[in-house]
Length: 298
Image (cartoon, rainbow, N blue to C red; front, side):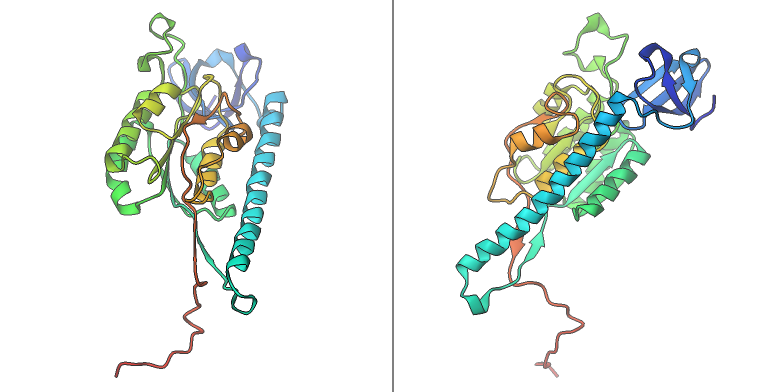
């Protein structure tokens, strides 16, 4: 067994694929390849596999992920049509202007480099302006102190890996001490809310697998995981952020649409009513390299 190997756990029936991140004596630290789960496991409970198994859970997740991406793209097409129709009704036929778009900007902090790369690729596909940083969960609060004033995002995503501890005090799910990284997420959210306390000015999406949903909301998150303490898909935070980015500032984000159409569903992600960050502007921006201008200053 080596760092970087793909493995499954015998004791869980090989239901989820992991990658070995670290080796400690007879234990391995493992991270989910599709789900934002961090765990440790005895080496003798792990089986090395050549590729991530396409079991029922993985297949369902892949289907949901493709459906969610299709819905986001369809939403963008419908939004373009609505914008053009709205402008057509307000302007004379010969003067119909073309508009430009200002979607909400995302600052994405991720405790997993592979997931960060996947997330940034999806933001690019969806034309969501995003800046991403690979930061350990314990360092996210300090990173936000530095990044928020510089990036000035409309949406911040705080995610990585989490999980309910097997050896937790009195099996207590109310205590932050029962979670791997929920306290780190809470600290990062608190920094974000010190920077901007208004929920409609800065949308905070936070959490990972089995995170302390209630504590993240109480700290100031607009959307968080995981109400049912289930595993969330790697791209669920991206889906929520993209919906916030392309929902008009005149509208609240459609909660039912977001929560039912995330890959993990309503037991994976929840949140509070929030306005969108998307704006349109007039007229369409010119290509200055093609613009003919008569200088007015010698």
